[in-house]
Image (cartoon, rainbow, N blue to C red; front, top):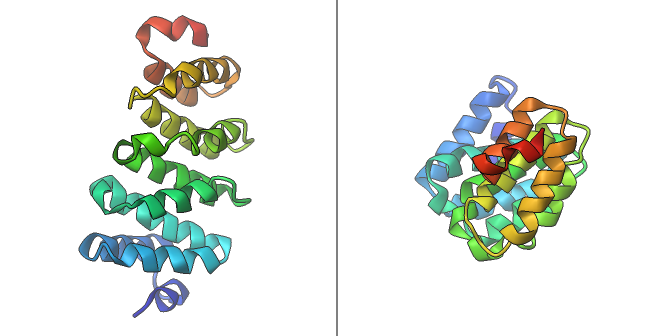
Length: 176
């Protein structure tokens, strides 16, 4: 069975398809390139499922990710479909520690997604930005003040909490 056959299989539920794809990735890391090539041409629901499988697999085994994977999900932060955006941000959170020097090009799209009307897109952007902040790179000089500003205008406590924890306890009052 290949990716197309799996995703078109009406007998399997979406979650099961994602689990199967992530297992393929975990057992055969070179499959990542094949999955990204398929996703790049797929319609948004299938693309999101492929990226979700990458997210599941990289949560367990971040080392399967490559710089090509980082570039792929980084590009998809600007996709139209919210699910593609949020799954891409979650992959970035999983793999950021592997590529600390490559986060500068990713941060603008994440900051842009922090203003998205969708709660899950904003939550995922916060999650990825927090992971990048924890790397304690030179990006923090600009990133921490930006996160403080986002925190002040963010309406959801669950999202504000992510920023507060990333910024640090001593700076929490700046976030309401």
